[in-house]
Length: 313
Image (cartoon, rainbow, N blue to C red; front, side):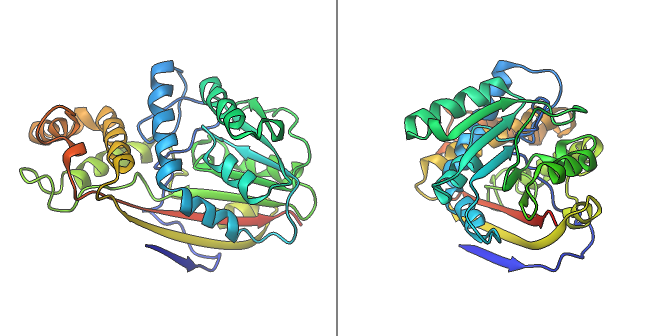
């Protein structure tokens, strides 16, 4: 069930808010366990990241469509830029929502952009999508035209200087154009609180470790983007938080989503977890073992996404 809540734009930073969680791609870096990215690119890491991005798009397709439908647009945009597009979850949701629009999809990862192009061809929309490889932390951006709508999902909090990126977006938007910033409240949770049976609360303890590590490296993870957008010269047009709670019983996709996500968590948290927790986590990740997360029938996807919509005056 999805709960949508309206918020006024003037609240302070929410310590619990992230993206990430990051299923987004950091525009111009490489991947950490939060599904974001950092310097030092590896194709294998890209492949694991791409798998999570694809599963996220599949499992949460309805919620992403709900966000695109909520955007406070007066007319359908014709030119859209997706910053930190990953493998295209937002790109294709926006193309579905706005059938007259053309898209520029921007990401640092050539592997992600190649996968996005393959999807565009398979969907028959390759004539509406152009991909651009770029690092959004760079001083100069490539020419992205004058879009009516810019979309950034789970990417802005990765930037070293998001203020620079916000001002650049403001300047490129057509007057009256909209900027949508979507961020996630940390990595999604999948297990019940009393699971696994031998180490209840394991997932919470793993997330406590990864949240602390992410806070050290990504100071804008969990930020309230309303004041940041206003400071960059935007007029805030709306904010919405969507609470996600999807029953995973019988869902093969959710099982694989949980598996891929917890593998990323293990990669980040292994050195700081107690031996008993690490062993319990490895039992969940052993797809051939009796305790494999793929064998559980009590999984659910629990997370939050917040979208800020801001207009260039």
